[in-house]
Length: 398
Image (cartoon, rainbow, N blue to C red):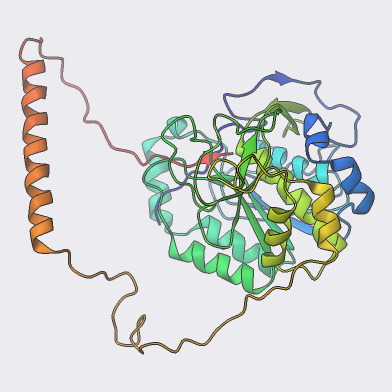
């Protein structure tokens, strides 16, 4: 399995966008609602629905179920990350607790199913031994988590996680799990990514077909600087200065496409409570049709715009017809594997094109090597040191 630590650039708990810490263990029974309430038209939406009877699976780093804002609303599923940490450990459930509280901030009567598929570590905090152990495991926690959530009553799956590097890749077992979720009528959301002000790398699972990718806005409705810009973006939600619960019993404020995704998942829970028969395709259609559309229409910045929860819940009562359905394939028999050809096999590259690229790469490497030697020629030789080990760039907690 390709190693994926999933991280989101600004979460209410771990990210550099941390702004302030509120009192520990407050007596409040709900997570405080800030500007995102007005931005989402949340008050009007909650007059129509509270999320009754809907289960939202939060695939994350674990959820502290005894937090005052979460108590009695969380069922804890398996730990597919299997790093030895347990509930109650200070390094367990930082990000997941925050995300669960954001879901319930929108849909207070929904239930949370917590499935642990990531941890809270930043990539630079990992030891070489931990990286090697992740490769040896060979399992895919995210795919396992999706399958478990679908099999155990989830109506909505919220994944505030992804991969913010240029080498993130498609994983067949994740795609298969997402297809299973779609067949079972489970709506899946994921954060769009927090690399918009960096390399703007693609992010999975947001990039998979069938997943509702959620970008982040700031208070004026424009894209938050960190929110990744990609054509897979479907909708947007508030992602700046969002107050979320901590695994210590208090609250913190932070930024990211992670809280944006969790808030959007809460809106979907309101919709599903209003109309339990909504299919994933209908949820997507309603969400995108009822947004606060940006000037110029949909774009890679914010998809079809910031979610309008009140309008989405109203429209959920009479959604457009879902015309998606399995269709028998009538093409050639060797489309995939009947003739033994692997699905990932591609035609050979044209030889002339291949040779041109190889020559260009050789010339570039020669020039690079010459430049390095020239730069080092006048410098003192450093003391011997251990060789550098290339480590995979992990995803974001988001």
